[in-house]
Length: 284
Image 1 (cartoon, helix red, strand yellow):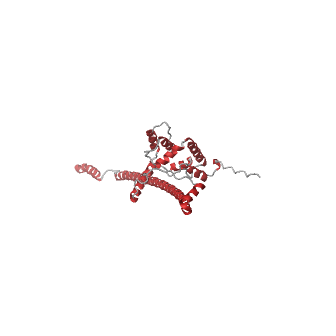
Image 2: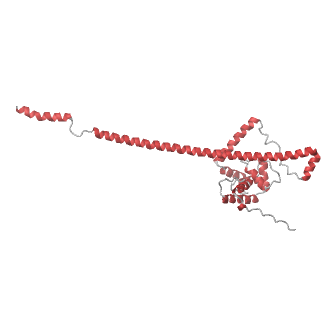
Image 3: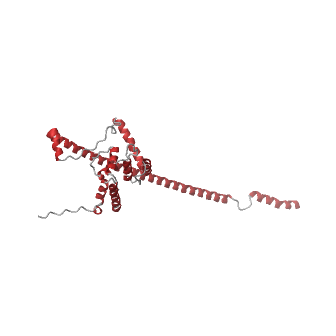
């Protein structure tokens, strides 16, 4: 009996753009929808090579430092996807290997022998003004919400714990043995529900981030359009002022030429007539 041959998985270059973008997101990359396929392939392959080079324990150090909910057995791709959502720029408590790995995942060129101060300075220099403003805005919103709900400092308290590993068949039987049928099934359902809620919250957060980026882009377009309109108004006003000044100057010159007399004035003419009549009276 011949076994059916397995269909080989498609090559990375054969994937359509939407699947490439989805796979890049699993690697922690933020690929734009208008990006060319060749550029996406290059970035994905560079990220794959980088993940091969990075130490897995360094990635776990980053997740523990940022208190990201991950399993201890998570793959490098899963860890990179979690790390991509970390925007913190204060690095107290992060190990040196985690700091170097975080900088390389953010695209900052660093070396393992660089000290912490050098790595932190390069990461802060590589942060754009828009990213800094977005991070400050989120920190402000988070601080306001924290004050409103009264949960200050609760997220940072306690020892970090990894997510429980995926339970197998024996673990499920042990849960039923410990908590009974209803309790074991409820525990399993609760774990699945927690994973589902966490995944949906990540999707909502990603959607909110995209909307904020769209709002920032539209605000930038409106600002540029407003500046262009104001410059156009200034140009029109300047041209109109020059035309009015030129017309006023021409009118003044024309008026002075019209008002200037071309012959002798009446007073000079009467004086000339008197001088001509004087000799005639003297002869009489």
